Length: 183
Image 1: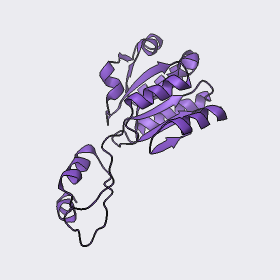
Image 2: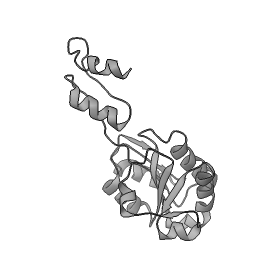
Image 3: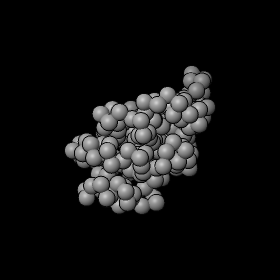
């Protein structure tokens, strides 16, 4: 109940800490009004990296689910990073899955060349938390470039790698500094 939130934020004798879970407006309100210490996040600019060793069916299923299951949550995928080495082989099924589910896809030139339904991505798209049925898709030249993109554009919330390569998974987990890192 939103009306109760304001009262709860003043209850310093009864509540030791608040962990607000919700949309950006709720987090901003709690941050501004709380007299109680809190753990918070403000944005979920989450990535899903499809590594060159990804299983094609798993890549399609995980990407579509990570974006379309609940598009308005802070943990939904906002950017898909596709290893250039496997883009031609894996991306058509991923794009079909996203578009068939009602998602607008914004992509770089490589992604656009693979599917005429893809809208041109802008620089702003790599830094946008859509919280909607929109996703940006970018090709990268391997694990290092994927991690570099996540480090530069991510919000340290939730980032994932889809891979069958144990060494790539371990490197991703070791080098991506996010609250949740998924393999």
